[in-house]
Image (cartoon, rainbow, N blue to C red):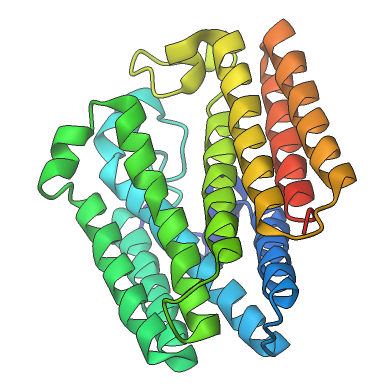
Length: 290
């Protein structure tokens, strides 16, 4: 079937990323995670060459794009009804094109990890299988779908597993220090913080499907949850390093709280975007704690 959009695929994919997979935020946040990983390992007396971290960054972004596309395809029926303005729904890209790009990025992810370390490659393949199970909602994942909070926790587990795969690539083992475990939990909490902030919407953006935290908890509740999860991430990151930066920790919490309060006081689209920007900045600062 020919694509309904005559523009070149690469141009359309660039527009798609700007709307659904913003590299302008993902590249610095990925770099920040790699920096904090390096800092924690250096604090433990471990050292790995820069090219490994760069390779992990490329692999990580490839996996994140793969999971974004998985989400788009899995939720297509819901988005057709409640989000008709999204790229797939309005015909910017086709389901076939997204599927091909998604599988290609999954392949890049596994290949790069396999080249870094066989154990890491095996774990990355397992993570890819998990993501595909989520795509087709195999087994208990279908039961989880209507259970909003539990479902989101399980889906976000992929971000924790992604971090563990990276540790395996860098250490060539599963025998990690407590610092790396704390670091992984912090990154998981930061991933949740971004997801919650992204789903703090203005009343005119809400849908009958209630697929946002603001629809479930109200604007103040969703804002408070964003700050609380940021605090968990900051606390875990401080436990990961022997000499954490109190300034970075205070700034991360302060900026997250500022965005949350601004949004809760006046929950419009502009304040929602402001909260998302503050969440990204808090994410970056938390990774500067080590």
